Image (tube, rainbow, N blue to C red; front, side, top):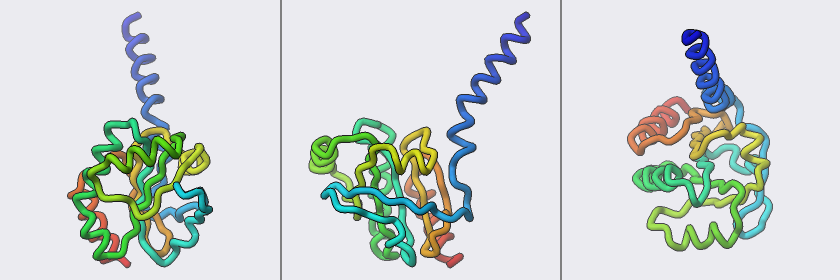
Length: 165
């Protein structure tokens, strides 16, 4: 039954894609109450960002797409600075030493805040694919939640978010 085999293959493909698309935060959702630890081992609570927009990237040091995403974020670093949008980078399941070495060797703009995640933040945000990029407005409302995006998309999203607020 070749037709049945194709249906099963299509279903498996759909199920493999589902977690990436179904569990992302939706535009208009409230950003969840999360906390973590900085690279300097200080406690960090996202609630302290209320009233300030932020760009959150979740990834790793070894992921090629994550490195490319950093390049795209660096292209809009002037906009982030001018609009006072904090850039937060969350490294999932990485050692402090590995992250420090990665940041020291990087030619990209350094994030404003670097968080180390043993999986708590990633699980809370249902991260199934990296990099994951969230843009959150000053009211703590998710403006976008996407996988890799280019600088032009980020720039346009920031402009729309700022004109909406």
